[in-house]
Image (cartoon, rainbow, N blue to C red):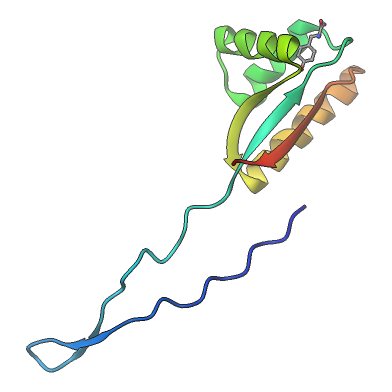
Length: 117
Ligand code: TYC
C-alpha cells in the first residue's frame, strides 16, 4: 500500500489587529485538501460467470441489478471497468472482499484499486 503524502507547509498568515487591540490571524486558504480518491477497477476474464459478477457488484458496490448488469457487460466488452470510487482504505477493503468472494467460489475474477487521475 502507498505511504501517506507529506504534510503541506503551514500557510503564511498576516497578523492584523481588531478594534479591541487583539491580534487576529486570518486563514488565507482552506486548511485541509480533500483526500486522494481511489477507483476500484474490475478485470474481465473468460471463466467467471456473468451472474457472479452481477451479484458481486450488487453486494459490495451497492449497485441495483440494472446498473450492475451494465457495468458487468462493459467489463466483458472492454476488458475492464470502474465499480466505484472511494477513499484509499475503503477501496482496499472492497478489493479484498471481491477477491475473497471470488476465491471462495472458485472463480479467477480480479480487481484492483488505483488513484483517480
Ligand atoms: N467474460 C465473462 C464471461 O463471459 C464474464 C465476466 C464479466 C467476467 C466481467 C469477469 O469482470 C468480469 N463469463
